[in-house]
Image (cartoon, rainbow, N blue to C red; front, side, top):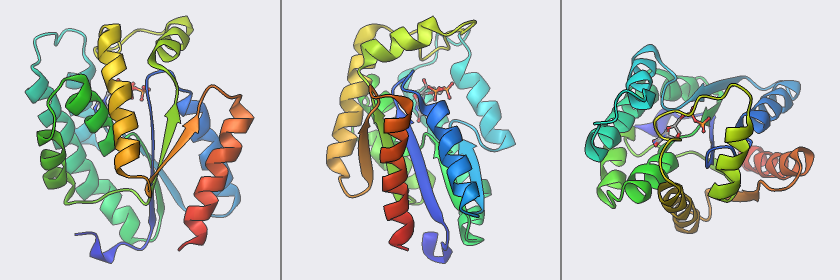
Length: 213
Ligand code: TYD
């Protein structure tokens, strides 16, 4: 499926509150300053159909959603996203930066919800096996992450953020497992450091990824 891929696919991951949005803005300006053609996208979402699925997934009214339904909806949103947006952009030689991708499903659904191995299998089908060239994992303890989020002004906790501390602990464990599983693809960065220190490490990883092409 990814045989006509000429661009570069980057994803960024982190537990809630890890400073992802700030770093994404910095990565985009850095790449644009280098004259790169960049597409910023997000999951769940990125296309009109996937954004509709996102609404369902994050709606606090959907308390009855089962873990399996949740996992399949994330995968369905991703399948549409890959086909409609990511693959065409990569075929045009663009750099795609996705705010979350398949590692989120490993962390939140396989580990957080305890669904295990089937999450990987379903996502291989959903993505046709497309994985990022580089995944940046912003490593912050779940306790610190939730504390940061809850301090944000006017922040409404979505369905996933409202989960108990034990859920977020498992999500974090899932991220560590995903990092260990894909050492060549995932770069783990300490998100406790200040914004500029974190960014300089991201920049080094992105530059290395661009140089390898
Ligand atoms: P979002 O508001 O985008 O969160 P953040 O700003 O932290 O990225 O909401 C996405 C939520 O969905 C987030 O709590 C993580 C969760 N999620 C999954 O559980 N599985 C997935 O596959 C993806 C992509 C996200």
